[in-house]
Amino acid sequence: MVSLPAGRDGAASARRLASDPGRAYGQDVLGSAPLIAFVPATDLATAHAFYAGTLGLRLAEESPVALTFDANGAQLRVAAVPELRPQPFTIAGWAVPDIYGTVRALRQAGVSFTRYDGLGQDADGVWTAPGGHLIAWFTDPDGNTLSLTQF
Image (cartoon, rainbow, N blue to C red):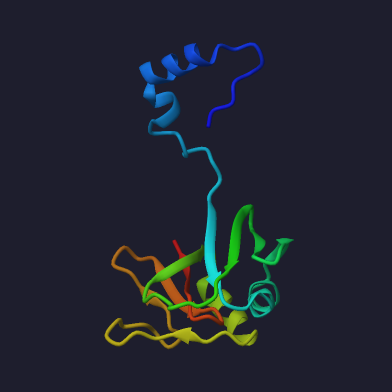
């Protein structure tokens, strides 16, 4: 819903938006809005230990239904779910400047990296994509696939 400043004619504003849908629904509607990423978790205490303790994200807000972490200015909302069937693809990832240093640090914190048959990952579990980007995958305690990418 669009809020109108005091004293504005709602019908006139609606007509103006209808005549120029790009203002309300155009290409840049979400272009300047911050992204909020959502990750499901069956146990928020375990998720807190992993995302804050292991990955080093700052907890910004906590409620009985979700944890919100500051992921370098973006919100990562870990939402409580009663059950979860992890998907076979990446649901969240981080761009890192030094993938090998990050892999090493996360391994020291107890993170195991996922190896995929036939992908040709190196000894550290890092795959070189056709465009040259370096990618490594790991999972959270619920089995959600997370990734690191060095562009």
